[in-house]
Image 1 (cartoon, helix red, strand yellow):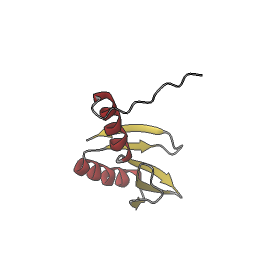
Image 2 (cartoon, helix red, strand yellow; image 1 turned 60 degrees about the horizontal axis):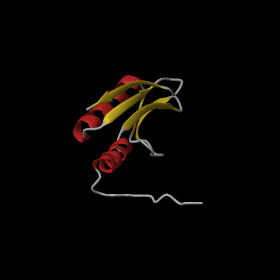
Image 3 (cartoon, rainbow, N blue to C red; image 1 turned 135 degrees about the vertical axis):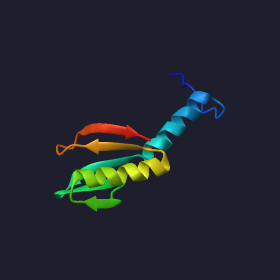
Image 4 (cartoon, helix red, strand yellow; image 1 turned 60 degrees about the vertical axis):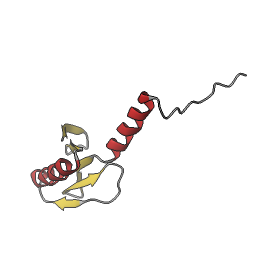
Length: 88
């Protein structure tokens, strides 16, 4: 069986764009319902950044963070599915 070499040419713009997209994705924030509270958390994180009584408060907090960091906010509904996405 012939092996196909795996190339990771760092000068390839497609590879660089993919790496940048992965890094940007890990900085995004999510507004989700947890234990009857709305929380703001970073993508992939286990702990919440902040906990709020209403979704509106959580969205305002996540929006403020995203604007400062130039990232996106994913707003989840009560069923856990993403219902809105906002990029800053």
